[in-house]
Length: 145
Image (cartoon, rainbow, N blue to C red):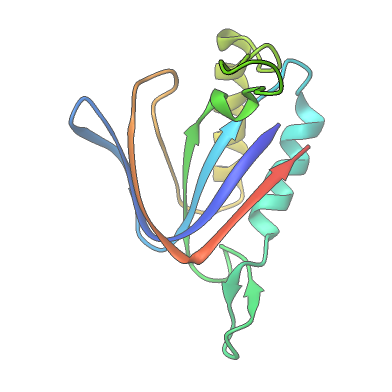
C-alpha cells in the first residue's frame, strides 16, 4: 500500500465537471494498493495517517495530527503510484492490485478512516478525475507499507 499525503488549505476532486469531493484544511491522500495488501496494511496505514503529526502547534512546529487540527481527508485512488519506470519509457503497473481487488480495499480504507471520526471525502474509483489543491507549506510525504 502506498500513499502520497499533501497538507492542504483546500482540495477538491471533479468527475465530468461535477465536484464529487471537497475539503478545507486537511490532507489530500492519493492511495494505491498492491496485489499483496490486506487487513494488516489497511490497519497500519489508517493508524499512521490519522496519527501523522504534520499540522503546526502553537509554536508553529509540526506537532498536531489531522484530528487534533480539526482537519479533513480527501482520499483519491491513484493506481499509478505503483508505476514502475525502471525499464523503458512506458510505466508498468504489474505491482498494482487488480481493479476489482483495489476497489474493495479502497472502500475498506475509506470505512476505516471514517471510523476514526475524521471527516472523509473521496474521489470516484476508476474514474478520470480532476484533482485541485492548494498545498500548505508545502508539506508532501510518501508512506509505503
